[in-house]
Image (tube, rainbow, N blue to C red):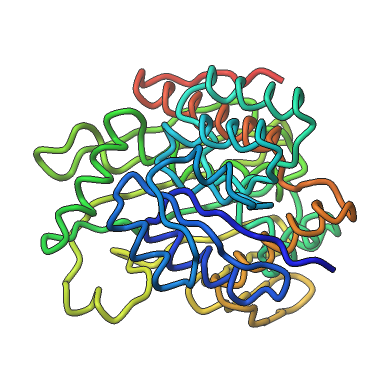
Length: 344
């Protein structure tokens, strides 16, 4: 099988810390081009990864002999870069969320249809073996319905010694919210795990740090047509001791929440350690699953399989649009302080 040349657009922490190691570990891929609005960052990324071209021009990357483009840009730029790559005939691995508004999301949907291109959305938890196991437990009836899902993410801490990190997050908060950024994963997980369909949205938010452009802690609630409930909680820019932060690859102000309550079992998944426990009427099951980094290996291999014609891209642009639509409705409901219906 031929080697696929990979181009990277957006050389931030997620790209260099997760995407590029996955590319390096896969025998079918090699990074050839790095592109970033910051030339120094693009050059540093290329030097570290062995890429032959560093550029600030997306068009130059697309004109180079790349087969697959990883789009890891700020979300307001993501749909436009991804659409350009599709029109150039490249397969695309597109980070979430696919856009910050429905108009750009719809534009990307239409571009996929018009080009008949391959676009896969970076919902890495679709490739997480523990969460695939949880999905199977729901389908088999081991957990039971209706269920309560608690999903919480508290990464993206305040770094007083890394102002560029804080400024990046505050820049996003001017055009979106933490709920539409990290909540994109969570909304997709609700769709992936629960048999029921979300039909109601509500919640609350708070700003715990002065000087931010908006609320930094969000709690969204999704009610499903089978009586299940999902809580999506995202907390950004909370304080965290520097000496503790430096010990962690991806620091969080507190442990993430991945809990599932049903009438027959309670399941807890430790995202950091990979420990998965299901305890209930049928006894207890304890498993240990691979670390989060390998989710990126799984999603890259899934796109390679799509390029080889073995499968369709999954999750695809429709999954990305559904998640975007759900989180934007949630955000709107929270801002208005009301409960809103989610259309079929």
